[in-house]
Length: 354
Image (cartoon, rainbow, N blue to C red; front, side, top):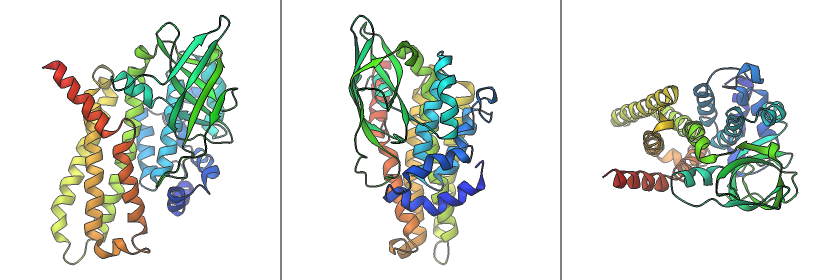
């Protein structure tokens, strides 16, 4: 990671970030002080340079310490990516400085839009015009990194002309309401809540993309690719813990550990190749398949860690890290779009092709 001090803090804070909200206020500023949101952001835009693959690697490293921290970084960095790929340069120039320093939080409310794009569900936010401005209504039931200290959230809106667009809403906008944090079984330090939009007046300067159907396929690889970084980092850590725990009677695990590691590396290589070539913009199916494969690798990796630890995994002291990783692994299949939704979308594509 950019700053090794963040590495040490995440190791110490990982359990607290998973089980409670006491460190919510500290998390994003710590990540920003380590330079993590700036990875993959062009230097001309105030970032550290590099590509989205560099950002994915940084996110994977964070996930190897804390999935809660990686989940926050994913939401924040993905929102930044929306601004980088938006033709609305004025909006990006206005928001990027505070986002890169962690003064303001960025949140991606486009999970509904990504599912809509894949034909899974209708848009949940709509706009009407009163002749002078757009008025937006709807709800985003699950959004991460909604820091009470200040946030901006992206959402896809079904326009009055039937053309969906993508816009940014601030937590201070009239009509924007944030719920209390959701009662999650883990990842509780992520400022995850619901958003309600009630007659929010939307100025033209807040529009990220005027045509969501044309724009979303270009940003979906970054959205899902960075999401995959959470699986990569968690799987790497679980496999490393399993190898380190190997002792008498554990040699039988050497082959499955090697095979699972190879599957992880193959999925990661395919992900990086697709992002570099931009092939996922034209055909998203391989990206969905990689996301599914990585989730399966995470499940295998955590199961191998359990077998390598044996009874120690069930003791509160030595098993604490494993207990957290098992909860983290349970979240991977349900990150939106969930594995069930991805598999359903892929099955539908195969039926249509047939």
